[in-house]
Length: 186
Image (cartoon, rainbow, N blue to C red):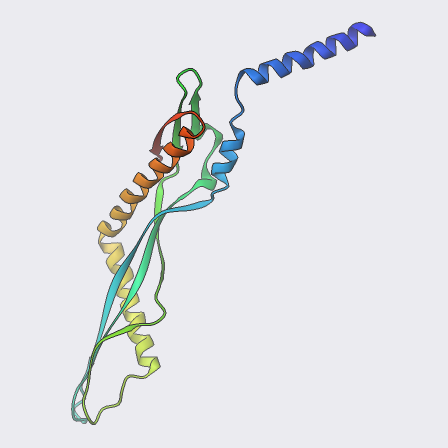
């Protein structure tokens, strides 16, 4: 019986020794993964909307120009990371981090529109809130189409986000004693 307990204690000590030989990096992995949707870049884009109407039966025109800001952001979904996306080289004190791809999204717009120009004829009515809302919806649909048709907006955000994400993770791992190289999945 003494031999059995001595054997068990020996196995436990052997198991403990093998764990202390290699650092446990699950803590930093969990910390990174818990960041979920981490925003690294954003931009405001000013959209201008114009409305013009003139009816044959009224005197004067109605011209209105409004603007508002729409917002885009670039993020990395860190919750999609796997343990094997972080590879350590203990001898060289380096780490290779492969992040999920940077994604972009439209993050919202100003509620209020700024009046840039308005020319309402003397016998014409001012724009009401319903007409302003229609102008804003048309401008928003136009904005979304512009973003889809012009990849420059997204590419600028992606480039900025990748630079900032690299710097963030290099600094994070440097604080833990490692030199990091950061790449992104396609």
